[in-house]
Length: 105
Image (cartoon, rainbow, N blue to C red; front, side, top):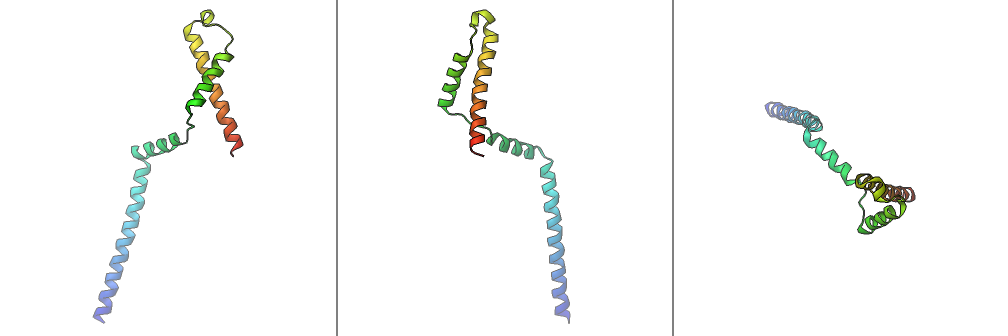
């Protein structure tokens, strides 16, 4: 009877250890969710989903911007013209991404 009781105690201790470890894992996971490392991980995952553009995309966007701005830089000044140019490039790349996303979803 002593050996059976000993085995039972060993099993109970092993189960208690496993239960404690599982609780500790849950606690560590919750701590990770609230940490700066988790924020960095999520930001990295989000960044990996951003569209990446090829050299051809950038060149096409630049050509698009230069042909679709009808006002000369001397009329609006360099800063305003640069803003318009940047907006046209963004417009082209956004439309390209939207079309690609629509076709591939």
